[in-house]
Length: 143
Ligand SMILES: [Zn+2]
Image (cartoon, rainbow, N blue to C red; front, top):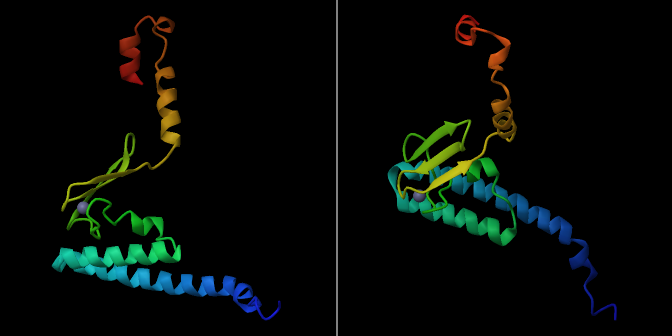
């Protein structure tokens, strides 16, 4: 029975997985760097690099860091370079960070702060009660 099983494979699995992940991370990083560089010269090549990075990520179950992922277009798979092929806008009170791909026009929104929502709820409570002052308009302009 003992010669049938291969205990070493299982025992080393954790180490192997970590080794695979570290190589994958390195390759993904190189590919994304190249994809960003190529975004200026050759968009198709840039998309190809991003595609390869995503495939490595998928196959090895290695995550692409979220701050890197934000600058990969979900629509066309292009590496986004702000000011070149991407528009980045901050709408702090509404939609958060909005990244638009200028190649295919797809828009991604990333909320910035969940506390802003609770502030919004509080705001209607703020306005003063007019009855406390006989001349509310003059008072409010002075303050
Ligand atoms: Zn796109």
